[in-house]
Amino acid sequence: MFSKACEYGIRAAVYIALQSLEGRRVSVNEIAEEIDSPIAFTAKILQQLSRNNVIHSVKGPTGGFEIERTDMEAVKLNMVVKAIDGDQIYVGCGLGLKECDAGKPCPLHDKFVDIRTDLRHMLESTSLYELATGLEVGLTYLKR
Amino acid sequence: MFSKACEYGIRAAVYIALQSLEGRRVSVNEIAEEIDSPIAFTAKILQQLSRNNVIHSVKGPTGGFEIERTDMEAVKLNMVVKAIDGDQIYVGCGLGLKECDAGKPCPLHDKFVDIRTDLRHMLESTSLYELATGLEVGLTYLKR
DNA sequence: CAAATAAAGGACAATTTTGTCCGATTAATA
DNA sequence: TATTAATCGGACAAAATTGTCCTTTATTTG
Ligand code: FES
Ligand code: FES
Image (tube, rainbow over all chains, first blue to last red; front, side, top):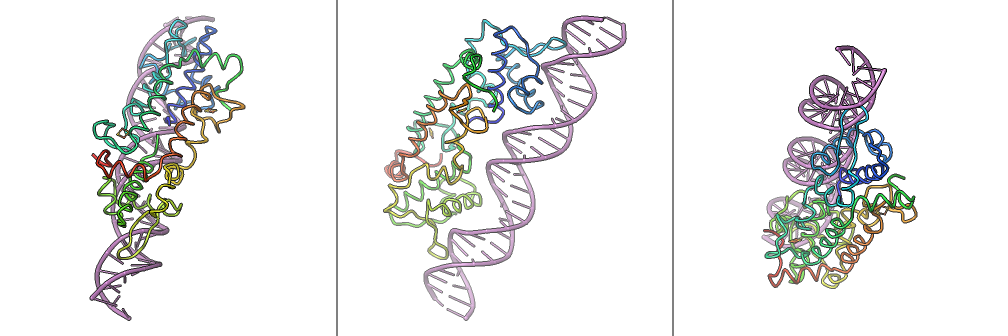
């Protein structure tokens, strides 16, 4: 469904959101530790998220990653996914034709579009804040 | 969503189903031509489908690939997907945790499972026959 | 039986994705 | 100002996926 990079990216973003709720800025090392991901690869992914203004980064001592408390509800999952995987998941044909085109659809088009639309709505309506709160109360986990 | 191999596999299977409706057996070369896929790679994928009894193959002159007319309604998309991509799409965690486990879920679990269940139902209920008929009447396409 | 045809299978090559390493840059603080 | 802690960025390496080529095997037909 998502690339490995995107999976790490979502997990990292949710962890950053969780810590930002308590005003803590977190380092790549801490993030990779807490979401159980390869450190250097995670660093690359965080750079992408930072460049796309999904998260905010601060260099130097006491630096790290954070998400503005005020933004937190506004940062939706689809922003993370788009920053890392692009919009292929939104516009691509399920059977790999050049583009998904309702005017000359593949045999799976109608059924595929239904699923994709649900997925899109889910990603567009789910905020990092919402996901972080589940973590906060111990209902969900970022590693296992 | 699906791997390239799986995309080719589905397109090939639908094309074979279409031709089998008219009692024609088709060669790898014809299939690759009609679905616009790399020939040798397509051959590998057809071997997988054949080994998993999704399609039937016949060697030698007049040989090729076919799907028993009687099976055609019974052969569902999920059989193609499972034969090629395995069941990761059914059992995997959306955020890449070891397994998807409702007892220790990732933050996206509930929402992800909803989508995945819909996808599963769609794949389990869609037959190659159904997809082939759309092609037959020129409503859908396998290349573009 | 011999020739021709088509899938099967194994080895290999190219590309993409995933992952690592290390020096440069930025900023806090002693 | 020197040291230190952190991200940034580029080059590189490993692994997985995608794709090719060629030989073998099975089967039909002359
Ligand atoms: S054309 Fe294939 S999904 Fe729309
Ligand atoms: S645990 Fe992540 S999707 Fe179920």
